[in-house]
Length: 107
Image 1 (tube, rainbow, N blue to C red):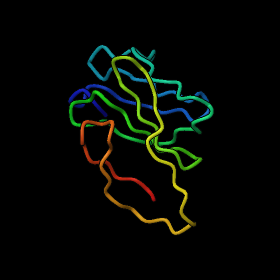
Image 2: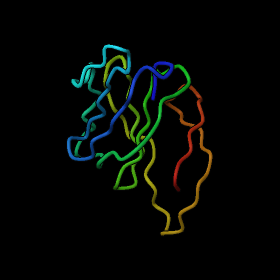
Image 3: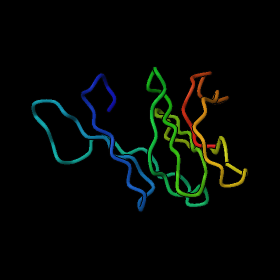
């Protein structure tokens, strides 16, 4: 959810895109915006979230990457790749390209 609850965001791992649907009373089954695709070299996005200002979207993917996209330009960067052993835990990290906003990440 974004846009103060007026937008449903659906991430499709196969197309590497996040589709945005309006939840206004005149709901349209066609997305009004598509974020991505993230680069196939960056993995396959599964889930994520926006920063507080909804200017950046961070997606965790199936290949241990954290991908960050700038909403206005739809440009994507790799921020983090887990290189540690399989000990998975949840931590709070600071994202250097997300204007200092904190995100939860599996590391």
